[in-house]
Image (tube, rainbow, N blue to C red; front, side, top):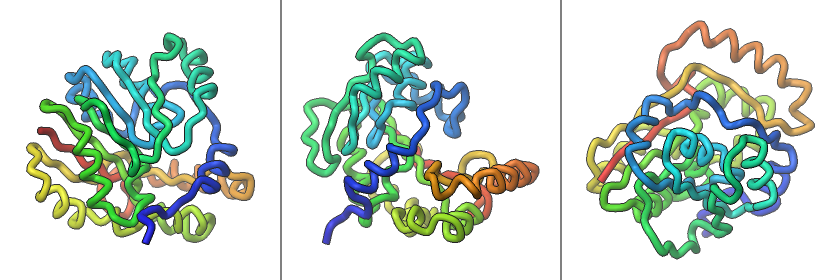
Length: 238
């Protein structure tokens, strides 16, 4: 059985609707930024078009790479230009993660919204760990669709929900996986202020305004947990 939940057609459709933005000033994993930026090299798995690589570059790590099954280097270069990042700063590796043969290790191994698109979460996490240098740090972010945000997806965009492995969003399951890795300073937690979203697909446009208004409303209840937190963060180091 294939480990993948999505295919090339899914990502062709996804990126055809995606709006490329400026490098963010703040990120949901801001509490980890200073720690991560003690490293000298960074790779994001599933990193196209390089938004988080650019953010980390702006924070001081000059050696940044994105690896993705979907890659359009022309878009990455335009993204660099738009954000005044030197040409070809973001190294691009066009590869299936499960067929990738690394030639080096990285001080920071990162992914956001990647691990949950596969059936075998433990295998995905351990493949991340294989890329870590001797002083490496790991940060994996997984969206939380087991609370209110998942209910929004189920009602308005069931196809998007079905592209995710909901089992990968169970905190205790992730903690059990991490305890087998031999890494240090392991932390698995809900992270981020309450937030709801829909992917910017044409069929979702009529719902976006209502979902955004509800998202603003729930920010009045900034309590971390399965019901409202938008992400799960997995951090560890060697």
